[in-house]
Length: 250
Image (cartoon, one colour):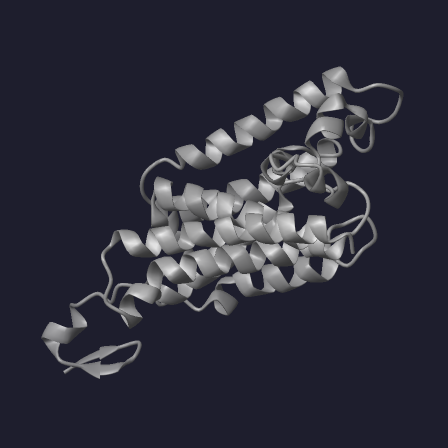
């Protein structure tokens, strides 16, 4: 027998290496192209916002909201009720200033570089846009008046999806720090000026999309394409819910 840190083991067993899976393990793999593309799009849009902004103010907060892009692309119940359904997507690529953009892109980079190599580019893109649409739905539910904009709903969705994928791969999300990250940022979401509805909606939408991709096939037999279609259906339901809420006049 050979002494080891976990007790006495036979010579053959002591030479074996136990494979440890952590959150960092998922970051190894293909380059997260979709993540980088999404960050680039958001940065370019913010630059256009600043270039077309009217009036004075700080580029770090406020002045970007004066751009015509915000007028034509931000989200509200009134505009969706008028038929501007594209705002459910475009609002997720607009930000109120450089600080708003920086925090969302920083979190997108952290979560994207971890999640995209683990799930693949197509699934990652699907989760992102389902989360964005679910976040728009949540924003409309929680905010009857005023404009809503920002990628935070989609980013929260990535966090929810990462939570599900980590559990599916045998990693405890609470020990990885992801659980604390989600809870801490949810608490911050209740501050004035932050769309808590978008954060909760995106979180639930991303988690549900990932669950349908990874857990649903284990519980019922289905062709491999069905879980992906079911995940996409979450986004379709979010669109239908958004239109219904906007048209309710409540």
